[in-house]
Length: 303
Ligand SMILES: [Ca+2]
Image 1 (cartoon, rainbow, N blue to C red):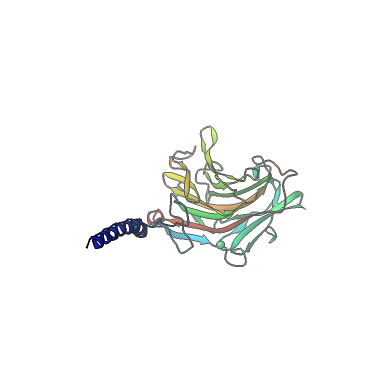
Image 2: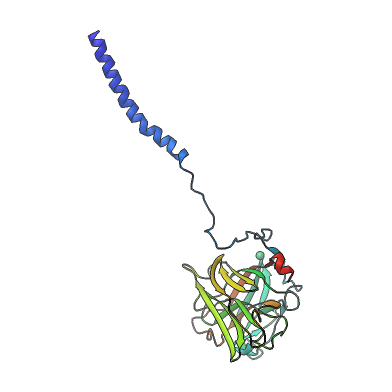
């Protein structure tokens, strides 16, 4: 009996030791069930919903017009060329052509290609496409996804001019620059409004700089949200600029941004702002535009 009691005591102690050893193991097994699995998100949080494809319409918006550049050629229902080589008021060096070597659709993108070549007195060719008369609108959300050029003297722009000179000639009727990029600052884009006051041309704007990489390395999405009393600029869904104050010599606020505008996409070479290409610049240079999407709210469509 005495021996048996000892054995029982040992069994008890061994049992307790086993339980103590088992306990942490049990905890380890149950712990993951109690802790919520961290959500895996493909994209970081953005200030506005960013559509994944053309059918994914952001909440509260209606698709007014889009070009996905999914065919084999530039859709002439949407775009026509502004050709010429007059410097466009900025001492630009390119001659804009309608030649397919300067603009074409390939692999789902509109490509505008700047070439170093002599043409009608200029030393570079490129292209400038406009939606004038074909696609014009007042207010909306405009998304443009694109990969840009790089190098000293390259100056791509996505911008808007008024369909009519409601408040007079430039700049009195306004200009909205959705995105401008200078090739020697490949990590930065600019958004600007041009308008006027009694003293003449006025402009206000801001810029956005990527924390890593450049706008030439990969595609980024440029969004403008143009409302009656507010205009906002976004890169990849992140708000970087908001403007509410503007004016024109020839109308009451919110003029001149209360009439119809059309879109322009071009790749300029040289000019007053970027400066001219130098020995570091390589050609050809191109921009690739994956899509242009214009949305409006129901209220905007009633305007
Ligand atoms: Ca596309």
